[in-house]
Amino acid sequence: MSLPATTSQTVGPYFKIGLRWLDRNDLCRGAVSGERVAVRGRVLDGDGVPIPDAILEIWQANAYGKYAHPEDTQDKPLDPGFSGFGRIPTDAEGSFGFTTIKPGPVPGLRGTQQAPHLAVSVFMRGLLKRLTTRMYFPEDARNAADPILSLVDPARRATLIARPAATGLLEWNVVLQGARETVFFDLGL
Amino acid sequence: MAMKPVAGYRAPQAGTQPDHLHPAYVSSIKRAPTQPLVKIPHTLTEVTGPSFAADVVSPASCDLTRQHHGEPLGERIIVSGRVMDEDGRPVTNTLVEIWQANAAGRYYHDADRHNAPLDPNFTGCGQAVTDAEGRYRFVTIRPGEYPWANHHNAWRPAHIHFSLFGPAFATRLVTQMFFPGDPLLPFDPIFNCVADTAARDRLVSAFDWDATLPMQALGYRFDIVLRGREATPMEGS
Image (tube, rainbow over all chains, first blue to last red; front, side, top):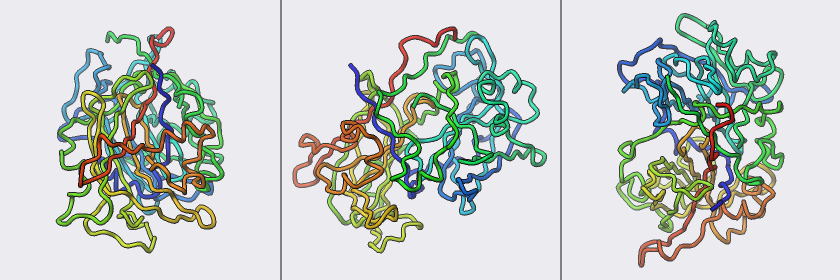
């Protein structure tokens, strides 16, 4: 049996009424293992104008490098206060902010290890289908051997790595077009 | 550390998905990426994803006509269907979120400046979790059409927004459901974002006698298909 997949459509300008009930700017519920980090940034369009009606979703492993999902069969602990999901809308100034923990490394393909990273979906008016990208952590030696980063033109890799802004605070922007355009991934969609 | 090799998700059937840039939809011009996307394999990150237990969603949240003291204005409808993958397998226990305009074509949103009235008894958002056969069901109000600024005399056909997660980060989908016979469909650049007419037509719900409640509400059926999975793990994974 083969059914054709349903066509993606934009979230439009009014998604907040449908999606805000599940906003999650702090991915931690109660005591969670790991190094807490705050991330701040902006979403910018092709004119460099901040986008006040975008929404990001985060998916990440816990501090041990374990996903709260049945297909992660690694012998690592789950963290009951940490599901790994975040949903963060931009504000009127096109800014977003969230708090999480730095995830542990997770397996890649062919026996490799992936450096700590967040998987990020980006939705907004004007996007007929979501954009997907990743945020990596600065000053992490494991980035050099990350099998996904290594698929990216070295000149553009920096768009995927957050910058330290202050103690415990990272800055990472999502830039849709232009010289500093964020690397977005093709997941086959 | 033993991890079984992971099987990725297949590309959806050709022609079913829009490009990011669709100039007829003017907002895409400054928001679609200009650099080619970087193709990456599906790793453990992409084949896992968030899940939301049925207890996150209260049973009342699938009835949009009972979220306030009074009944909303407009025509009550029942929207139901199944969520499946491209192999016809039900997608069970997955979160379905919907949002929509009221019967007058106005969203309960501060950015919606359309001069149609708000309805104090209608917010226009709901949630459900699919059952063991992938089914969901909402009771709501038929949304109104409304004007927008995309081009001269632009009007959106009546539609309901749907957001679905599926089993993995790779299966996330946001779409819109339309109504049969809507005369605005041929003029809507969002509905017409793919060239394949059969793909577009699948965004149009079907009138559903079986779901229709006598003396109460018409039924519309909207089945949703998420991408299928590779039969075998990635080579060498």
